[in-house]
Length: 134
Image (cartoon, rainbow, N blue to C red):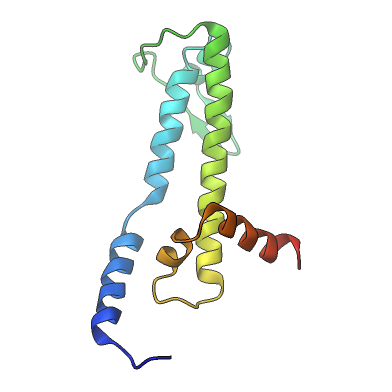
């Protein structure tokens, strides 16, 4: 282990400050909003979303004026909404897993950067090691 490096410590401090002052929840909220606006074009989902759909105590409403121009057929739109729902769920879940693993061991002065540097295979190996192969 080398001697303390104040310059590197300051760089890590600034990186961490920048990263942790952002709001990843806003990103996922915007993705969800875009998905709901698309889903509101579906005849089955649209009416419920325009009236307000409550899921686990959270109400989601899409105003009738919120529209996305699309050339998708009704079937294609449903396939898109289903696929995008899964992608968004997986993205949010992976982000939480990465955040947890990055901070669990307190090994790095810049935990989020360390976990981001893992390859996809290394990341899933770390997930398995932590949650499956104990």
